[in-house]
Amino acid sequence: MKTHKALLNDVSLETPWELVELFAKTPRWKPADVNKSADMIVERLKALGVPVTVHEPDIYLSIPFDASVTVGGRTMRAKPPAYSVPTTGVTAEVAYVPAAYSKSIGKLFHRNQTVTDMAALKGKIAISEGFAFPQKIREFELAGAVGVIAVNPGIDIHWGICTSIWGTPDLDDLPRKPGIPVVAVNNPDGNELIKLAGTGQTITLAAHLEEGWFKQKVPVVEIRGSVEPDKFVLLHGHYDSWDMGVGDNATGDATMLEIARVLSAHAGELKRSVRIAWWPGHSTGRYAGSTWFADHFALDLDANCVAQVNCDSPGCRWATEFKDVSWTKETEGYAKAVIKAVAGLESHGERPHRAGDYSFNNIGISSLLMLSSTMPDELRAAKGYYTVGGCGGNIAWHTENDTIEIADKDILLRDIKVYCEVIASIADADLLPFDWRAQVTEFGETIAGYQAAAGKAFDFAPAIAATGSLAGILETFYAAAGAGKIPSATANAVIQRLARILVPINYTSGPRFRHDPATPVAPLPTLAPATQLEGMDKVMLGFARTQLVRGQNRYIAALREAQALASAALAQ
Image (tube, rainbow, N blue to C red; front, side, top):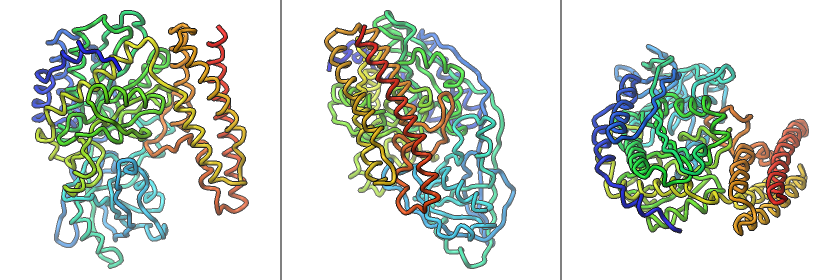
């Protein structure tokens, strides 16, 4: 593919590396420190002559400080995840729930525990391997546990967040707020605590946190396009971090700063606008900053955003591969082409996790990238590293060890160029480079799998027929658009609108303009109960079929809307 050589040639490390070095000395999880770091970004933008708007919303956050586990006369160090209930001390016996550590990032956020006796958790402190992710905490709380200890995989303890609430809670979200204290410990201490299960020995958890409303800063840059200035690509990432957070996410903040500098220097050369936003509340509010933006600019995003690109953990040491990159299916071919053209590397992607700052699925926006480059699996294995959710695979992720050594200048320069080209080519494309045929093909594969799982218990023939019908229309639509038989403005409006229709049905269960929980979402989630039918008794099977009828109706209605949209463009 043709790249924007003038833009890429202008990319340098002078501006971004200075910010990486500054943030390597700047803690960024307490609200006052977060705002100070926003000021540092804004000062640099202004010095570069890049106009910036700073919003100051009130967002709801949980700020963790410290925690402990006391047993006998010994006190073990611990960390409380954000949204743990603070306590000066909860004392109870230990109940052990075995869990497997995730082997890949694709499984990192999935439920990993096996509860064989829910009643055994009542009144106990549950202890289980893994990170303090929401599904684990929710299940243990519902079983009556009075506290939870998450045993992290290594010698270090990782910061995190234990609520599934996405962003600032609304009234409907509040029932999912955790109601028990939660702490994380390292692996040696955790294994000692596991041995106490069933012995009658009590332990005491303590957790210090502060929760409430905080005014936080959201810097936003807009570089206006020359042809369709109202249409825009959104590049974004979080600037709050745990401790110094160099690989997660000072390198991302620096990447966005450099792209803002380069694109501003070439203002007017791209057809569409580019917005660049830095989020607070990622770590302590489950993406509260990006969720606030998605809520308060929802109608503009709906009308005008052609794609969102997340920037998290680029430029980390040993990250020589683009593997397990997040992208929605329609953007896959484009993303692979850019990575190959700029970095000279093949790439592998996967369905976006319900994580990162992907706060725009319920609006329905084509999306690509989150984590980008990472270290090879062979190198991780050789180093004895376990799976983490950022930092290019470095296990300094979410710890005090995420310092300047985690960043790599050469890899950062390469990754900035990849992000720059991804943004520029979308903003400058005559025809938006998103192929909905690929997504509909995947829909067909997903439904075929669900039909195989359901067997004779449910018939997906109507969904299969609707999928085939839309696939045929899209083949004709893309052929006509590619041949110039459909005006590019018309074709692009269809491609953008298809995202509003098809992204929500594939990545959300709730209605548009709300936010699903931060728990894994199966493909076409309202059809996913098909995988659970085997072995159901007659009563439960009836309920499941009812759910599938409703899910199939939703799916077919969406595909009919998409087909009508493409057909109308062909008829003009």
